[in-house]
Length: 419
Image 1 (cartoon, rainbow, N blue to C red):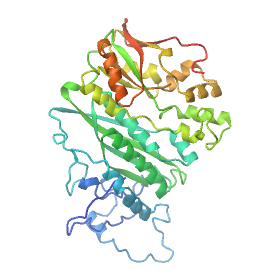
Image 2: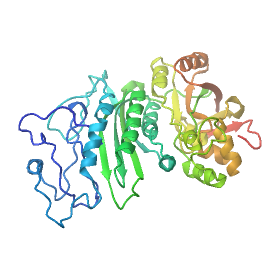
Image 3: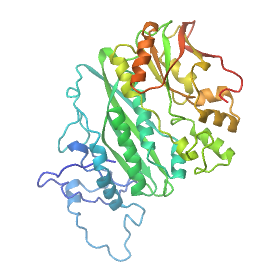
Image 4: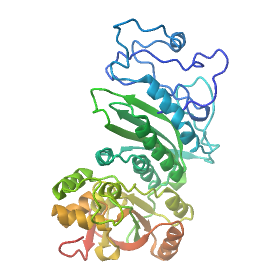
């Protein structure tokens, strides 16, 4: 998706926003409706093989009536008018994410960003891409699309901040079997909300209507984020034995492990609109779709205060699969399973699906969405700062000296945990 803003200059070939002809290339997706992007930043796809040039396309802005019996792109399942309506609906959403560094300009083929205007002197760029996985199946079945866009942004920007980077801009890819205006607008509204939470600009993207590739109301998402850090401020740094591990509470399952979640739900026999056994007042679908927490602003504050040595985003692989990734050889993370409360959703999943503790830990975040590594003497001040920023914070462990590559051990893990 993309947002055209402002009129083209007189005589500019895009000024009529012409519809393009069917694409003969193998992707079979609708033309990008964003001829011009947010705030004048141009974002345009390379023309596919066989497509008209932009000047030729301008001549087709008032097409002749379709001859009787002649096939149209809409007959083939691609509705250009629906895409145009979506663009109009999401213009204010994307505009609401503007930030320092976004640049205007005409005639370009990509989104422009000024690092100096964003306040950087000697920056290193950091990039990330991710999706939402089969959590989207839960959203589609429940008919609730307003929060998966937040998930999409969170999965990308949380991976940037753990490297000390400030997220700068975001692009998305939305693919569907048949473009449903209300559904797509809800998804993109969530993406814009995620960008606002992270402080990054939504500068463009792609909407692909792909009949034959997806069922009519099914869709998939991919996100792409770019951030920057000053060269001397990258993480991790100076991590070693004696450091303290702070766990930041998750909002629930976040966006990993939903193939297992859906298998457990199927075993339970509960429908998406059934009351959630672990969340009074919510349906099962609503509870499972609680959006991934975005930790960007709280962690950047801790980092800029000089207290953050490293951070790990706890996604697929859980604590054992993610925390060692930011630790050097010669240390072992020792966690105390009794040091943090496990949200009820995980106990329900474990009980209902008879999922072992080791499997729970390597699939789900189990209540800890982010781990911050700080010096022991900074631990109390760091916890206070994170709480002031709105985080739930728990002192969950420490780093010990150990031979070999970085490892992890969890103590006080009772039988049947987390039931």
